[in-house]
Length: 232
Length: 82
Image 1 (cartoon, rainbow over the protein chains, first blue to last red):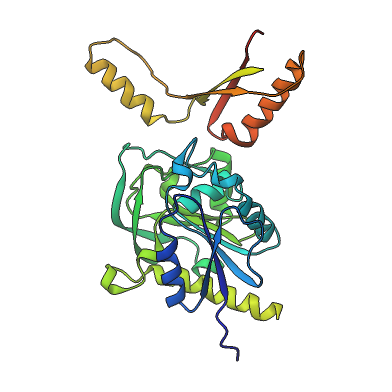
Image 2: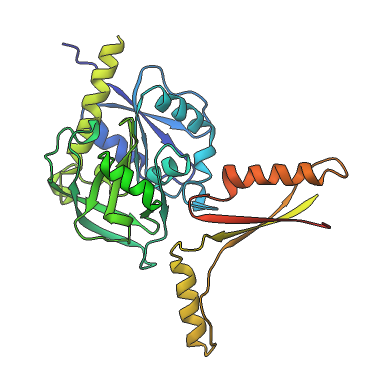
């Protein structure tokens, strides 16, 4: 039994601000977090998973996540994802993955045009993904949200297809931002890239109000461990 | 060569910013219908003289790859002097 901690690469863009919380939380879940600066062109050797953190990359210029989606590090992330590597995007990270077209849809300004900052309940719609393997079907997770542009949108045909294939992974119990179908998180068709607006890394200890985020991050670390072991 | 790109939320796409601006204009007493808020980008493209077709093709690629998100935005390219 190997006790090696799997490497999770956290890509840091100018304006990322949840990278350190993500590193702390992933460390607590048994991973070895490694920061990757946005202009690096390779991920660390033996990267088991990638996390794109929350924040305001490039000052949210043009559209949230659009500038980051073409950063050099994203070429490496794209190659990693295309090879089947696990990628989780949180908040701005979700926006970046949509802008990079690694995930379907796009995040739009909140319906109410107000920044939303709250602990919210999200329902697990698909517990069969690698990211939700520690969750039960229909389980409600309490996770914080803090975003101004979190209203997920896709055209109707795309949305219907995603729902039919189980790619809508998380929905808000109460739609906090006007997302189509109250979508809070989606996974790609292959099942190795997921994005969500709520912040699991801020909810890994009861002292923070909820430890439910640990279920998602621990599942990522589980899967990253298995992949690193399988490759060894 | 200089170009101006006009980027607009596609018809049917909810534009809460436009709605907010509409509300404020009405508060000021203006009788306005729908208001939509988009974005304008001025770009200088380095191309050979008489290269306006090339410039247009390049700007179209810029729009598709970065300046606009085709899921929600349409764009219009205006080349200076054309």
